[in-house]
Amino acid sequence: MVFERILFRATRGNIFIRQSVIEESVVDPNSGEKAEKNVFVVFYSGERAKSKILKICEAFGANRYPFSEELGRQAQMMTEVTGRLAELKTTIGAGLDQRKILLETIGDRFEQWNLKVRKEKAIYHTLNMLSLDVTKKCLVGEGWSPVFAATEIQDALQRAAVDSNSQVGSIFQVLRTKEMPPTFFRTNKFTTAFQEIVDAYGVAKYQEANPSVFTIVTFPFLFAVMFGDWGHGICLLLATMYLILREKKLSSQKLGDIMEMAFGGRYVIFMMSLFSIYTGLIYNEFFSIPYPLFASSAYECRDASCSEATTIGLIKTRDTYPFGVDPVWHGTRSELPFLNSLKMKMSILLGVAQMNLGIIMSFFNAKFFKSAVNVWFQFVPQMIFLNCLFGYLSVLIIIKWCTGSQADLYHVMIYMFLSPMDDLGENQLFPNQKIVQLTFLFLALVSVPWMLLPKPFILKKQHEARHQGQSYAQLDETDESLQVETNGGSHGHEEFEFSEIFVHQLIHTIEFVLGAVSNTASYLRLWALSLAHSELSSVFYEKVLLMAWGFNNIFILIVGILVFIFATVGVLLVMETLSAFLHALRLHWVEYQNKFYEGDGYKFAPFTFVLVGNEDE
Image 1 (cartoon, rainbow, N blue to C red):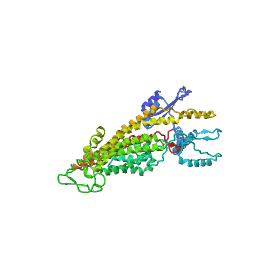
Image 2 (image 1 turned 60 degrees about the horizontal axis):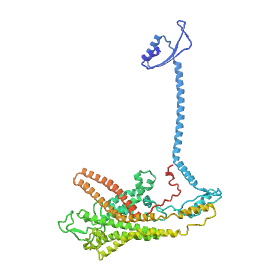
Image 3 (image 1 turned 90 degrees about the vertical axis):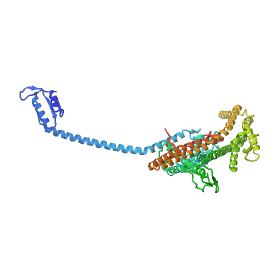
Image 4 (image 1 turned 90 degrees about the horizontal axis):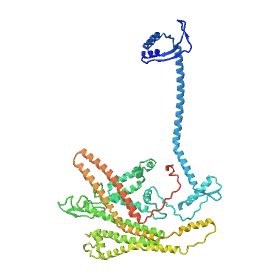
């Protein structure tokens, strides 16, 4: 150990030494005596290390022997080891290449295999719903199908029997049942989004009137009333056209949550943009700037005292502006009072019209389901109550527009209830208005008990007549038929709770009477949001773009243009669009659909492979 330590220190560790004890004693040639010896080997590099090692070996009396043959053997061994390593590397590389090819093959086919397995599981899951026949040789399945698909189902069953070489054919038979069928509406890529808007409120009962038919027009129109600017409408239209023109490519890609919603409702946004352009032309607003597109303004200044900030001195020199608001109103003192009056009264007219449409839809529902009670004691009093009050207000608005009267409609409607016998004075819009108002007030008051009282008593009388003399029924012979008749009879003779029916009708009457007022007021959101959109657009134009233009500095102008663009896109085209969309959604769900739409059905869910790939395990 001392010899090894001195070698290590003398060469500063730049050697490799190995030694081993010789088990048998070795005869020393110099002394002739036996002595214990160690055999050692030292690997070194350089002549200086060699000279140090030789001197240390001489000092310790170590015999030295040449190592040339051993170096040859070592080189041969290194060559063999290197060759074996190269072979192993080649083998491992070939295995990795095969593994890579196998993984790529599996990766390419995994989705296909996974989809096939899902389809097979879906098929077996559906087959497990079938029941065995009495003979236990046939499977019996019951399900819903559209009436128009009966022929297609029969053809499919025949093809399946031929393709499978079945000796027994399939039997297709229509069953009669008292269960409520599911609801199925045939839609396409244009109408699907509108149908989903209605279904989010509730799925229509079987054969109930579908609001989506009217929602295709009314929903984007009410949105456009709040979003009336044909410049912003063109921006929405261009963005939607991009989604529509690239729908095949985008439909196969994974989009983000917001982009996915926008792409799914691309045709809704398309209709909203078209109606926004239309209402924007009526409001005569292009990013809050009026343009005389259809003709020159009908007014001119009488003298120099007429300025842009006032309408004093304006005289009418031409025919009335043919379409929309005359551009001369924008930027004047009378702009805000004029547009406020216009949009507020227009909102009331649109709201009363849509609520009347909802009540008319309830009439067609009652007529289709042959419910004369709902026709005479729900539809008729509701139409009388709504139109004797708010329908009459709508007529007064139209008369005031046509005649140019200065009558105050607020006082007319308020004193119609508080002081119906007083003279109208300057608020009179047409002859015999007082008699008409008294008649309408009387009819509105009568319609409330008309809705409340008769219907519960008529339903009670119908129930008693339907079950009179049916307390006992003849029993069939078999136990199975006995069980069926007993279960059916329990449903047919449910106890009629008159108090529950009366309370329900009372709640329905109060809800409609109060709702007629609150729903009409709710349509004023059309006026409020339209005014807010117009004023925001005007602020961005005047306080950002025109102010930046006034500095006569190109850098400030570029910054102002960028701020105007980002404010228009972020606030008006994104936030205002979402706000108007939600308000239009509320008007349809609450103010329109609750007049006739029950929405207590459930969707028809046929077996299909379309959604199998998207379903979770």
